[in-house]
Length: 65
Image (cartoon, rainbow, N blue to C red; front, side):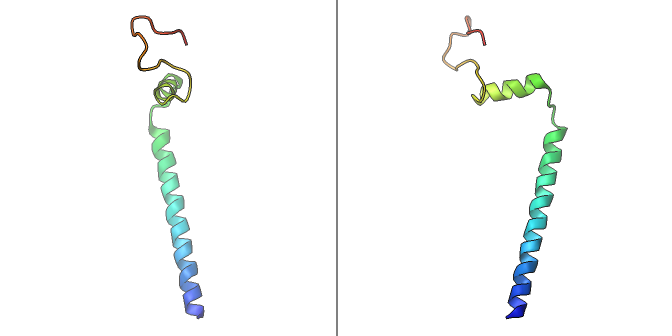
């Protein structure tokens, strides 16, 4: 019975270590991207997280944001 408990603890520790390594890799990948404020704002506008042009607006006369 003790062997099963030890195996479960080892599996849990390995899973946590893999999760932490993946998070560090993801953070490093995001940090390497071009993160100027203008690019971030454009991406947020595209995903409608901040105010921006709607797709159906008149492109010749876009609203002032």
